[in-house]
Amino acid sequence: MQIIQYVDPTGQTMVARVPRQGTEAIKLGSQLIVEESQEAVFFRDGKGLDTFGPGRHTLATQNLPLLTRVLGVPFDGKSPFQAAVVFVSTKTFLDLKWGTKEPVVFRDDELSVVRLRAFGKFAVRIVNSQQFVNEVVGTMGIYTTDGLESYFKDAIVARLTDLLGENLNSIFDLPKVYDELGMALKSRVADDFSKYGIELVDLFLGAITPPKEVQVVIDERSGMAAIGDMNAYMKFKAAKAMEDAAEQGGEGGGNVGAGLGVGMGAGMGMMLPQMMKEAMQDSGQGGAAGGQAPAESEAGDQTTTGAAATGAATAFCHQCGQGLPEGARFCPSCGTKVAG
Image (cartoon, rainbow, N blue to C red; front, side, top):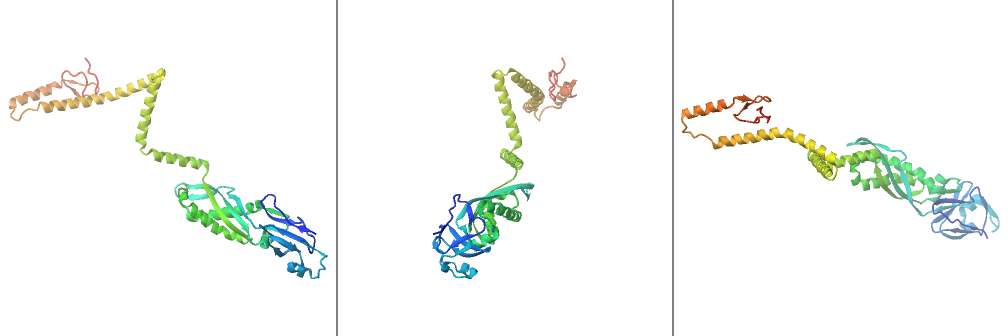
């Protein structure tokens, strides 16, 4: 007795033909064994005729009505007929991958034009065996998920490109629309699968990412935002650098410490004149406040005081030209030392 069956050793075979090429003589009374996740379709003259579900089937005229009608001759229980049996897997095929071969150009509101890459996974199941074999497999002896991935990943990317242009303004908005994009993409691609007798069970949007150079710029931008006040940050960094240099100078880094000392000395030299000017102004204001003449002062005293004040400015600073008080050793305006 002839037994016809097919067991998939890889788990990735969607369609297997027995025999691989052409047809073979199949006797009535032969046993057809179909696995739980399979359907068996009898093909003759390039047409799918009778279909069998899971279980053991004894081939007889009552079980092959379409094939019997095509042949148009009675069987005596022994005569063979020429046909091919195509086993179609009806299980759900998981972990199928899709992704962009080349970056997709996207107009971004914040980054102008940016190139994006996308990838994800999808799962399918064959729901119409004869349609799938006629539309996709044809006369191939075996058909695996590799052929399905190769074709449908391009269809998925094409639909995704449309969705991004319609629903996204900037890639910075992606985290809040991943679910919506995934569901919309699955809905839009489902029709592309169904016309081949395939049901799209699941479709997942793994990630949408810009090129590495754009990611570097985004990281720098986020780093600047984290710093906040750039002026305060630069002052902090300068103070930290001075502290580190001073520690190195104390631990044997004499050149570094000396260099730092020279730099700090020059800086203090530039700051001293202004500090002295402010100190002398404060002193002058304090003296004026403490020595304010009463309103009842006589006119003669006021004249004497004014003459003394006028006469005090008998010398002038050779640096800024301001008058020098009597006995002054430094110019109260610019801090320059008065010549002896």
